[in-house]
Image (cartoon, rainbow, N blue to C red):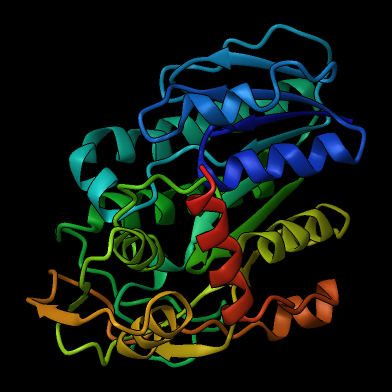
Length: 309
């Protein structure tokens, strides 16, 4: 197939490109490098089935090639430091960027795949979070530029499906980690790994009792590929239901990398969700998908990858 991937130079986007190329597809990557990395594009430039367009998809997607089979929209800053640095750009890529991707899919009679997020649930009052939960989001908080951008992206994707017949898919990605994350990503796993590599104390915000569910990127990509083959249009959670407190995860990283490290505590950030855990019953039934990578192995893989760079 011929597949256009926005956000191809990002963490998840680059792993998706790699999997699609490995499966024999032709991939057109699109990125403007606000949060993506040029090194991720360079991994594929010599591949005969890869081409790249540097563009801001919120301004348009300048693709004029052969008919597409899929438009897969993965473009957006995804970590709090990045989307809080670029709040307007984040809102625009969720709004105009999504619409531009949908219009491109419509013109090519292609399918459209939206990468949404567990952040649409906000600070959830239901636990674990099923796809039927509407969320508890602060619409004007410091995280709202990302949360509301993705909520809007889901809404316009469903509107194009219902009113214009676009064949759509929507995933809600829960905390994901793995190689190719930026060192300044700012999320829990990369913070801990890079602090550990530098021999620094591990920083826990608040008392560390807030929970997260961490999935390794290979498991996420497997879920994405499976959903492409299933005719289902409403959102579906992709995440690992194994729940850790942030403090437990810090202890796990510490024990795996350097037991001598200290753990220090700082003030919690605004609107930081207290609990986050996916209900993956739908993915298990529909996709026959369950994450396979245990946290202990994912941490080792990420640590070894960063250490060897």
